[in-house]
Image 1 (cartoon, one colour):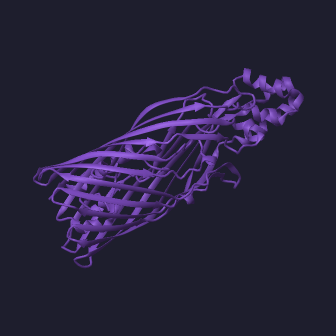
Image 2 (cartoon, rainbow, N blue to C red; image 1 turned 90 degrees about the vertical axis):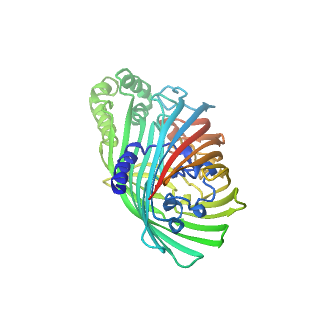
Image 3 (spheres, rainbow, N blue to C red; image 1 turned 45 degrees about the vertical axis):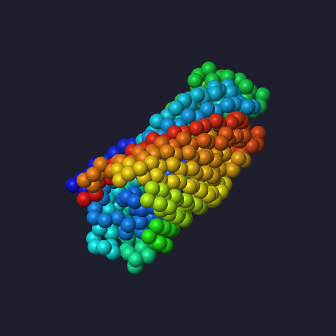
Amino acid sequence: MAHCALSAFSIMVVLAARTDNAAASGFALIPQSGSGLGNAYAGVAASAEDASTIFYNPAGMANLHGKQLVLATSLLGVKSQFSNSGSLAATGQPLGTVPDNGRKLIFIPNGYFVAEINPKLHIGTGINTPFGSTTEYQSGWIGRYQALTSKLETLNVNPSFSYQMNDALSLGAGMNYQRINGNLSSAVNYAAGVAGAVPSAVAAAAMNAVTNAGQAEGTTTISGTDAAWGYDLGLLLKLSPQTRAGLAYRSTIKYNLSGSVNFSANRPTAATLTPVVGAGAAALVANGVAASSADGAVNFAITMPDNLSASVFHQLTDKWDIMADATWTGWSVFDQLKVVRASGATLSLTQENWKNTWRVAVGANHHYNEQWTARVGLAHDQSPVPDAFRTARIPDSDRTWLSLGGQYKAGKGGVLDFGYAHLFISNSTINRNKGGVDAASTALYAQLAGSYNSAADILSVQYSYGF
């Protein structure tokens, strides 16, 4: 029964694993359980209260008994608004519109199963989406040459085990088989390409010709997939009957996504340009544009960062628990996004220069009785994105979490957890273009200058069944 439930849930994860980067810094996704949200995921490497500990610290399985199945989902609502403040239009193109991103609703599902083989050995499996990001803008917006759609989706299968060394120390480890899908789209400024390829005296006329023919702008879509392996390690230390400390590490996972680039078909043609520059020159320009915007195979590398978490959980009284943790994430592995054609030629290069980050959190539980528990949590999550290198694809910034939640033990092994968090996201500024800040890049990609005002809400529910 458990195997069938996890198999069905893995299909649901594939269908629903699209999210927004507001759920955590960078494109990491912290909401991998419903029980942890009420505490803002404080102390999750030490609390080890259900099978979702597979993700946060596999050694925590030693704290469980019998078998347990956990199914959870989080609903993320994101509100983001871009405000323009001095953006510059690309050559031959109108400035464009200011987007109204509105509110998006996204599901983040996950599931876990743990079995106690004997009092010392536990095994388990998790299915989740540790990384993901989606940003979508309307066609015709100011930054369309830098980003229209950006999607990063992962599916992670995480078989794990724990072993209790003695009454105080438990160790755990797991393997992570992770698949990734990436999709990037943007507008293409054909008018600027034509203007740069013809004599300056006729550049304006050439741009007018392709604009009148509906060939001034197109779109390009880059997509790719890959799969790779990683690992995670953990230890759980019982310092006293009331106090536990946990330490957990998840490794980097390196991808080289293989896929394709596809351009829309409305490229400038020789027939359109011939009345302006003559047949010979028109053919050269049209062939040049076609060569630079040819469909074909591409690949691009992305490395998922490693992270190290230290947590503590302490039972103050029969009614109160407190917990805290700190997590370091090695985001500096994401220094650039480079898309390369099969020939070895660089199709696109964006400098990211992300920095390593810290996330700190504190939380508390209040046990009203044997059935009901209330939770509260507070966290601060640093953004890895330097102001000078913020892009429209991931306009990330620092966020502060305020969380509330609860638990109801229904009896006969059933436990229902629920939580809510509001994320106060710092305003972020952007002042760059896809290729840099030079005039040539502005001509092709426009200069995007402005700020993002964002906020997010997360609602989670989790059902655990022990047997």
